[in-house]
Length: 455
Image (cartoon, rainbow, N blue to C red; front, side):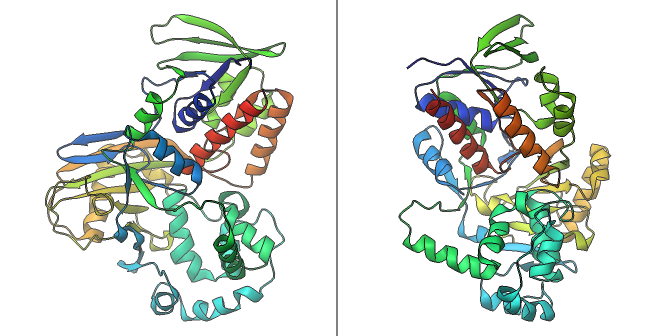
């Protein structure tokens, strides 16, 4: 078998996962990274007895690819499953935390949803399926479940996952499983029941869907991926350009010492953010660049708060989400030390609070001092602690999460057309086919499989 010359642009989770799965198939790649470190925003820090994340705080084992990957990476990376109390999710309503219902009895008794909507949901299986493929999530949920279910279940969930606006986000692209339940079965409830029956009789392996981190932080996931592959990783790269020459690709760049390089490759895999594509891929048309540049992103400020001695509310839960309807200045708070025992000293607590998002972008323009004051005020009121945090760290991301809006159809069309027009070129990343850690690993697996099968 001829060894193809492969280049991967970007050494974030998608790029490293792709390199790992290529290595499994006996293939080697050159990975170019602009930053001086690998892993993108997936970085962990330990100080003062706290282990906190600069980027994603947790993941979900939502497919078999990521579950199997963690098994293969042992002992270089130790998977840490969240405690049972992480199943408890809190939602803020009228300045008070309420657990999100998890069964029929709690759904009936919860104050989160109106009595009208609790009765209305009984008619959900009999409502007609929607016909608008670009229906936003706000309309979708209001139509099928009712406004209170939108306001105090779905909207805070979208705040927590996408930092997004339900009136912008399109169900078909952002929550395809939810959209397909209605399209295939005519009902979310009927569809969920039918899917569960199929799973019981299916012989296919099922993901556990457990929440996870890694012992000593998610950075160890990144370092394990680096260690267990035969790709050559170049960090600190600049002036990266790809041009087309006959049936090959010419890749030029400068290394960390400002030394220029030029190499020929058969295959190029883009894992960089969408807004960086236009300046790197020299043969994109102006219309292609406009498509990628027009992808909306949510800005986020993440604040890590550590307490050596916790004296606030009971935090035995995954965390708390603040619905947009509540008009708070934070999106929510993750109770990291309640999920994972190694995140804070005994008797202490570690939190990850989030501000900004599509609905409150202005807060991201404030100074660190202003943001700290706002977030501490919010957290002290909602978590009811009396002591000053022993650790406060702010992490800013102007392009944190790509938003799957009506524009997403054009994004998918453009990527498909480019991959058809330019053989052995692949466009991957968080702006297409999912934003979660599991989605990134799955995309890396599928890209590596496609390249291997095409040899």
